[in-house]
Image 1: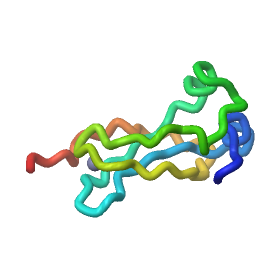
Image 2: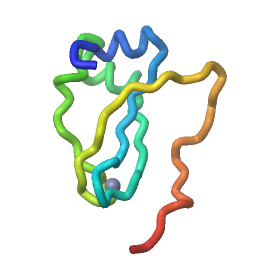
Image 3: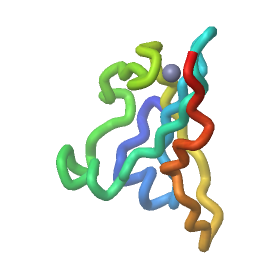
Length: 86
Ligand SMILES: [Zn+2]
């Protein structure tokens, strides 16, 4: 995904996600708000320019990836129910 830009991601109807997949991580899953991102950094912003991010929950590095969004899928990404106290 090195040369992809935010505009291309949106044009392809893809979703930009980050997941906490590091060993021992909390497996938390984040979905970026593409429209808001484009508004703030521009559609020409390359995905490879996204700075390394860490998980808000456990502080481990997040893995950024693209995913396709099935049409008409309107599921809530704000599911906090599986958060467990350590
Ligand atoms: Zn985490």
